[in-house]
Length: 127
Image (cartoon, rainbow, N blue to C red):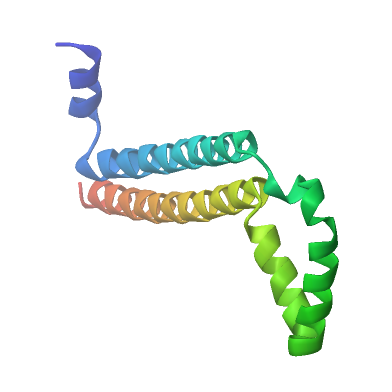
């Protein structure tokens, strides 16, 4: 009998389910961090065409045209859209999403753990 069999023999099915939920939460966090790192690394390695010297006057004219056509809200939305294209911003969004999902998984694991503890307490009281 190896260590894994001994642990499974001593753990109830509810405790195993809690452990699986927690392992899933850790995996989600690790995948989120790896994905954010990959997005950031790949995004910073590509050529930045915004630094092209031949496009210096274009940005100023484009901003003025956006302001005339769409007003301040149009400029704000344009800036937000440009910020969301940055690899650093995308990586942060991935990390925040993975953290929220992992927190939800850990929360459900905690609920299952409390339910398992209540069931074990009820079983011990019956005996």
